[in-house]
Every structure is written in C-alpha cells, then in structure tokens.
Length: 114
Image (cartoon, rainbow, N blue to C red; front, side, top):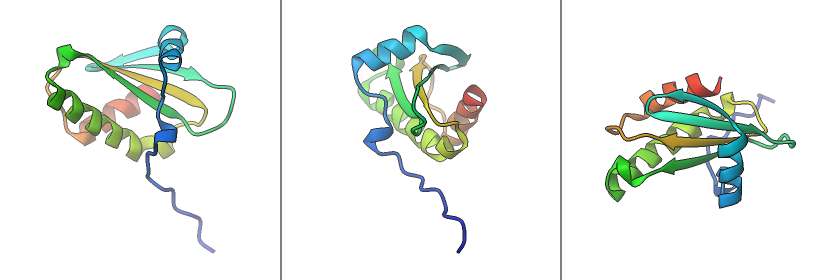
C-alpha cells in the first residue's frame, strides 16, 4: 500500500486562538524577522501539529487589504505546514506593506521557520 499523502487543509483547530495564547507567544517566543513579517515562535510541550496566529494592525490598510494579506498568508502556511516541525505556536506580526503574492509569502515563511 502506498504511503499516505499529506492533507493540505487548515482547519480552525490549527489556528492560534485566544488573547492569552497570543500574549504568551508574543512575550516569551523567539522572534525572527523578514520584512514585512515578524515571526514569534514558542515551543509547546505536546507534539501536536503547529498552530498559526496572525496579528495585523489597521496601519496595513483598510479591512479589504488586511483580509487579502491574511488570506494569502494562511494559504502560504497551509501549503508549507507539512515541512514544519510539530509542537510549535507561531504568531505572525505584519508590518505595513503592499500585498505580495502567495509564493513570495511562502518563501518568506520558509526562511523564518526553518
């Protein structure tokens, strides 16, 4: 029987949720930066799949632009998630910029996480 192919889904269970989790990851996680992204990563004690949270301020543009950036970042993470080590919480803090394409975000995320 052939090896099972990874499923490239990104359900809500793989999203970082809750103010306390965001604050903990932001304050105690290791920070790496690659403009326009700053990644805070925090190792968890379990070995569950990694989780992603996105923080984007109003300085990045109106709601439509912010949502476009978040959608593209989630898609880039979705395609990259199986390459990442399990058991991490990732918090992306976005700086103001012109929205980039998904492959560009994917390359930037790969540089930050590996």
